[in-house]
Image 1 (tube, rainbow, N blue to C red):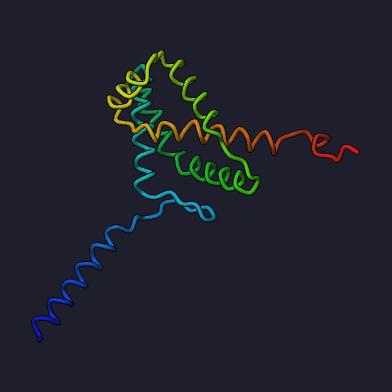
Image 2 (cartoon, helix red, strand yellow):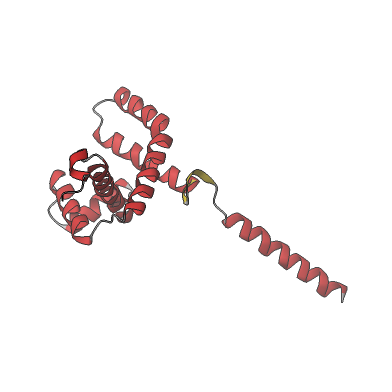
Amino acid sequence: MKKTILALVLTASAATLTAAQLVEAIVVRVGDRVITRTQYARRLHDGFTEIEQTSTSPAEATTKKEELRKNLSTDLIAELLIKDRADRLGLTVSAEELKDAMTRLKEQYGIKTDADFDESLRKSGMARSATEERPHDTILMNKVLARELRPRDALADKT
């Protein structure tokens, strides 16, 4: 009986420890939205990768990386605030808008096919979902800013 109880206690302890390891640390929280340590690290890694690919010198890359590291938290907070405002305004990004943005992105980098795009992402160590998230967020931000920064006379009732 004692062995059974001890086995149950050890099993419960192991399950609790495993569940605790699954909990992700929150780096930034804005309202109901959060950025986890993994998301932060991924964004920093993707930014560093982009800087390395586009910089003309190691000194320039180092400067840009330091600037990214310094401003990343502020940028993430701003993004979360804009997403929160978009939710409140009921703004969304359609699949067609995202598809158009991805097409423009591919054209910008001279990529002709989806296979070439996937190969480029693989070489960069970037995931397609993360790559599609950026244009999505940009479109959403533009919609929020366009809505919020309209001239005041456009908001007045036209009767």
